[in-house]
Length: 68
Image (tube, rainbow, N blue to C red):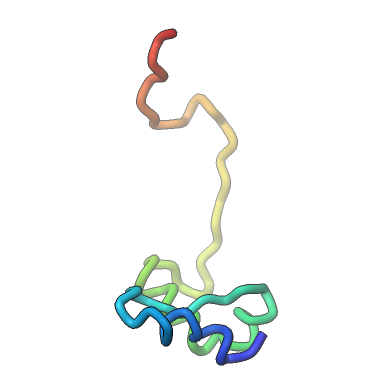
């Protein structure tokens, strides 16, 4: 993935907000200096943060499903 590919959408759609995309893992890795600050600012996730999945469905906070 090239730098041009990462920024192309933002160049074509200047009103899109962020406008940079890592289309693949390699693109993110190669351009981490660009993506890391964007991700931290936009999503609030720092480079060293870890995602922890909790697959316990009893802990879900979701609205009830409608009755059929």
